[in-house]
Length: 84
Image 1 (spheres, rainbow, N blue to C red):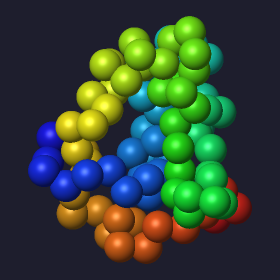
Image 2 (image 1 turned 90 degrees about the vertical axis):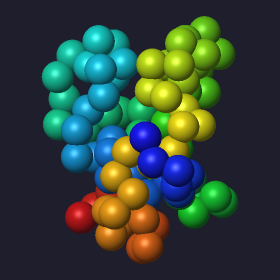
Image 3 (image 1 turned 60 degrees about the vertical axis):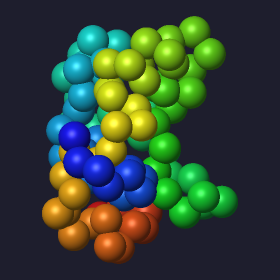
């Protein structure tokens, strides 16, 4: 992964459902555990905060290792894209 930290722009989760979500929910156009947090002004992954499965999801999704698309322009315009 890149050296740039995740900014919560949502691109990776909106563009492609992760394997953790796919195993939990089956194929969906968008993961139901992607959540826009108004107070943080960013997307958060509820799979990672799950009290039972969160640690495993963090490991599988490489939480803390940086952005998987550091050149994605959404990084510079973090906003709620739920109704786009």
